[in-house]
Image (spheres, protein in one colour):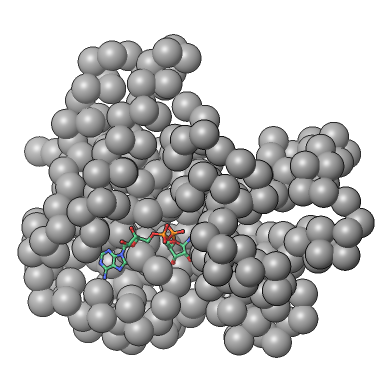
Length: 289
Ligand SMILES: NC(=O)c1ccc[n+]([C@@H]2O[C@H](COP(=O)([O-])OP(=O)(O)OC[C@H]3O[C@@H](n4cnc5c(N)ncnc54)[C@H](O)[C@@H]3O)[C@@H](O)[C@H]2O)c1
């Protein structure tokens, strides 16, 4: 029997996580309160899978089967038959508590909940889920459909059984889990948020342009993307939320949101999703194939 999982929130991260799960053979119920977000996610997914076929990474029949396993909905009740639900909505504790409170009413007691949060405590989110023992952190990396790392973290009340099941689920997705403690930023964002802010402050100080900093970091470090290419994928709005959450928890100066990010949000320069961020874009198609 095909296993069914849910993804709540299909913005930048949720769409990639949904592709990962569908590609691994799961039926995926994709829930978002915005029908525009669902339409955009469908378009991005079809485009991504088309490129995967063109690059010989996926057969046309696997593409069709993967697309057929993705079922979008604006009704939370449609997640009722999910074995796991991975949450990828806004980085806001109240919003996440509200969502998990509703999911707790909709899903059977055995459903395991996971949050893709980057900076909020898993234990704190789990406290509002009604099932803190069946709750775990699963932090995918952007772009999730291409990056294999998932930082897995237990909350203080996560049961051993949940932890083992979530770890096995992550491996069944074809991802590479690593165990981290319930710490803001886990491993990756502990480095990435201050690094991105440092790059933005170099631009604020007029040291170099985003394009030249991208060239420098790729040429020097062998990174596949420069900091501003990655920031444009992350989104200025999400970067601000990440900075505010990380700074609020750690008081680490380098995590404080640079003023330029606030101005870019006010101007609508959110990154690839709005057609303009640190760079300009002709479309909102996904990265890679
Ligand atoms: N962007 C990144 O680089 C990145 C990387 C790893 C983890 N994360 C984490 O993933 C989560 C999502 O980030 P994102 O960048 O994908 O955000 P996003 O703003 O791109 O997408 C959020 C989506 O959630 C939907 N949504 C909001 N409230 C909802 C609700 N109550 N129910 C259902 N859908 C709802 C919105 O309509 C939107 O489509 C955050 O917790 C973030 O910290 C982000």
